[in-house]
Length: 306
Image (cartoon, rainbow, N blue to C red; front, side):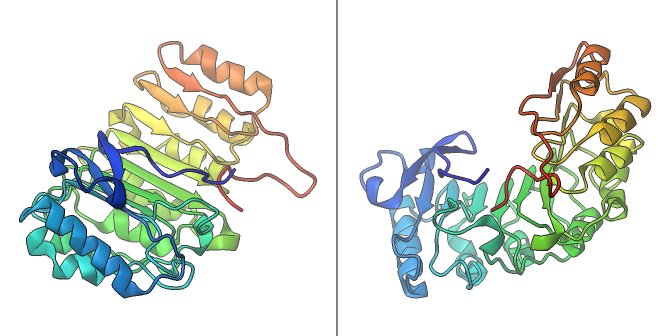
């Protein structure tokens, strides 16, 4: 599976392309999307479009901002400094998505990113941060009291970034979603790298945990089965990966999951018998075991790759 269309809503707001939103009655009631038509657009073109959004939205800036193609995303990282240098004009910004690109624009494993720590430091009121692509992605452990939702979508998420998230102090984060990906595209994490996140000590408000698109899905499931953080979750998402019977059996043998509202295991390699057992043994939980896959001669595959 590849990503074939950009978002139409973000942070509960309708997405408006810059060119289409010039006459928007309430600029704060939409999520502004900046997307360069030319994938080799010069940095000055993206900066000019960003300046237009600031002008349209007034002194406090947009409520939600989406960056699609910023120009040569396949080799140049998102210009973090552009937002950091204009932080004083982004006082209203609550939701930011960097890299909302289709596979035709740039494959997910090709999207270059940068150190996102300066963004978190410059935007203390930010509540949602989504990032797609992990080539060059960096994060230094930081405390951020405003962040409620962190989503990192990748074809391969570096272990170093995962360990940094586990070392962050995010007291109000309720939603964490990590697309772990595959080793071929930089996803070199093992279950041990997830240990601080699964312990949950720095994430006291977490209720939704997604460890998705994982080549090590069975290993992740075994770690989750004994993880302290699970007891206070309402939603657990292990979808898009290569979960098989080994992982399913670990979940069934581990700590009780009956307190969950939902357990997403869609896109999996479980046998019908194991999938059915999960559904039957968690009768009060919305268990999604749809999108069963068949293993190829060369092995299993995650949902989002190229």
